[in-house]
Length: 406
Image (cartoon, rainbow, N blue to C red):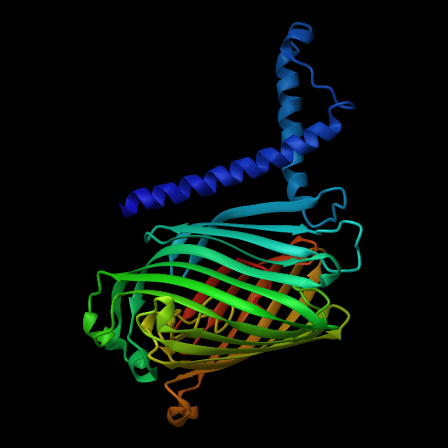
């Protein structure tokens, strides 16, 4: 069954790549059909067919190269400016695989050039370990920025490792065990603008997680292996960033409160508070300093699948996501983003985080360090593809993703 699923994902990734490339080529061909007629063997004198084939190949090669050369240039004639890139990759978490990322930029009102554009990202991955992932996330900005819709949908199958929860369990190498994690998530935030840069609105989330084939099921401490959680709540945000995908200046503050009561079908009732504070400022003409503070608190009968997890592609890059998990997490990172030449840039960062059961059990000695360096390539205008190499207390992580980490 798993092999069939992996094969399906591979086919989807390949099909998407071919379709997008073909669509881009067709669009370009349509725009040049009048001025660049293509001759065929039937219309050429004897012996000319071979040279014509070579010309067609060269033209295709130029178009293929132009796809990437012009991807970051604005295309005001397009209702939906969409580009795609993919290739082999390596992650210390998922091993060797093929990754696919895509970015779409659009405006609901194409005449409004003042309001920043909406963004959408598709992402997919399949690796030799059996890991596969497909998802879409984005921010839809309505005309005049009166409303915003934030969304994230994904599903994945991940042959993963599990240490239990709590700092002591995560730090105990003997606790490292294996299991298969299947997860589907849908998360939506709909925000209304109350005042300049101030937004508030409802939130809803749906998570299904199934843990299978635990090599050490005792680490679950009696909790169910499968959970389905439904949450509702509200969020408030203050956003002065000049651009969501790659801010050069501004502040972003978000407070989110969610509840997961039993009457919504949750076997374990709990609540969640999530806080994000980001700050951006130009250090000099080609450099930006970015600071990210994040803290998430879960309280009540929290299932192991919904506990705060350290690590991943955005924060504490370099740690195995989920090795350290508990009810609460507090983390801070500072990043310097430097433009180098043309579409090339780099980033260096340092950070720290701490997971803990409650405020009484918080121990500053359990704070874990993080630092790293990354390469940036401007895929679309101010939308970067990033390659990050992160270092933690016990290991190294390599990540391939789209958009800045925060």
